[in-house]
Image (cartoon, rainbow, N blue to C red; front, side, top):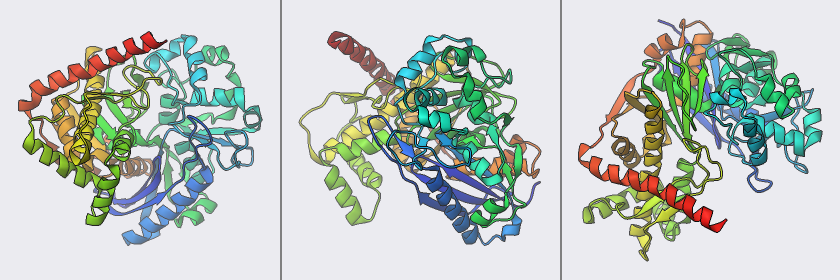
Length: 526
């Protein structure tokens, strides 16, 4: 068994989280620091790599200090982050990614949808490489973003010495090594890991061949050691230069390491957050239209990864509660009670269910408010609600909130069914992230999919996954599966309720019908 202590750093959309774990996977300390988002125009969302690095340093120092572990005992550090694009000049300084904006606003976030036309142009090539992203690149990926910069902001394109995925930027900042992760490059940059190359025909077709000189040429798989902390980074983080740094990972994929590392084949790992990601590993190369992948060794070495997703999950729940007519009352009452608004609205749902069997029976939501990532691959998709009445107050909020949870759960079922139709086997469902704190949402996920949900004892699987990659990188374990065997502990199992199967079979059909009806309406109005 390995020994020592390991750091995981997770950079999400709104915060940086750092956790210190021992060799059994027990979390000794945790620290969270907020990070900013900037919205300079429609569909644009940006961040600052300088601010994020500063908050990473604060979070690591606080977590290590709170853990009681001596810094000399920290053996390794693993980074994960959202799949956002970082632009740097030759001196490592930020470059603005929108005209007229400050140079430290140098990150195009994953949720930024400015590059819709560039996405269409890339997909119009019908290059064979697109088979490995479900047939089409997404507006959330990096090639459309860099093509947008080349087309619309040539000053930044010409000055850019390096474009990094955010996790790779953090690794570079920590080690002074110019490295890209196989995870980030394969899943978001159209790198063909199984052939160890980019598609030159694709890059030629959209005039992006010169991009290859602006990204690292050294590529390392998950769990590989990049190097140790540089002197400057060690000082900034409050650690020693002996700390080994692992290859960077996308945040959801780090969560997938922890959720699926022990039992990869047939385990669907649902990473819930602002958006949802659905990770499924297979020993076979299976192509699923509208679902990203298959990616070779991008999450667990030796396995093909298929990645489904929903562009708005937690973000849609938040929006629903904030925009409802009774939102002010909900948040005011929750504050007065000293509880989270979700706790209170779940009580309202329970009260509604005392009065009605299945309060969401006649209220249906199509949960595509921020587009449909998969399996429809339609960033232009929109959400809708069917079955509204003049109901007001607490019951109205509770009913719409419940219907929204059910819609997101039906979206997950849709992804799972498309995966199965294309030859995948799903025998086990695991879940981490924000939904684990919401028992009502867990119930709806289990009942909508008909699958028991296996949780972990560690509530922050993503940060643990990052720490696991560090533990492997420093040699504490030989590989990711053996590290997961030691560091991941099983938790509660949420059982699916078979008595709701008939209800959810009909609810799911209503969910699919809403898409067809909306497409017909859109066609009518064109």
